[in-house]
Length: 145
Image 1 (cartoon, rainbow, N blue to C red):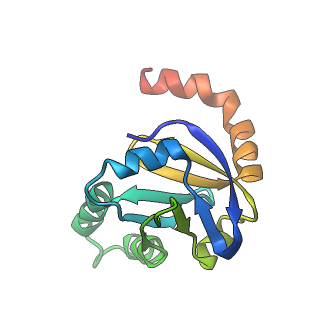
Image 2: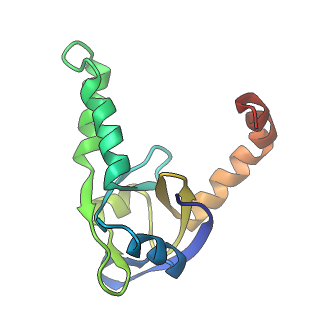
Image 3: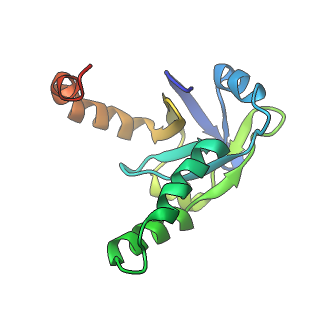
């Protein structure tokens, strides 16, 4: 389970150091490979393989032959996905196409969202938080928390 917020900086060659707390969680996993893909609010998503397999199972069960929107979603979502594995120093490589999509330059925020991590350009994360903060309590009431 991933929770919390971590501020980091992208280093040369599009590499990102994962915070030590996250590296510790990853080190405990048998399989250290992850899937990195484009998210929905111009952030990046990192899924452990077991969580990714649940998503692809859901996508595989959708009737894509009959629905153009399902085919389009699968194409875009899956075409941007790539397998990553932290190196010995805890760095991951962010491909240029995903870095461009998320508008990541240097400062990033990594947030834990239970079964996955999200990587945001720091400015974009702040803008997003400012936008949704006024509805935060209403959303909590709506989902029963």
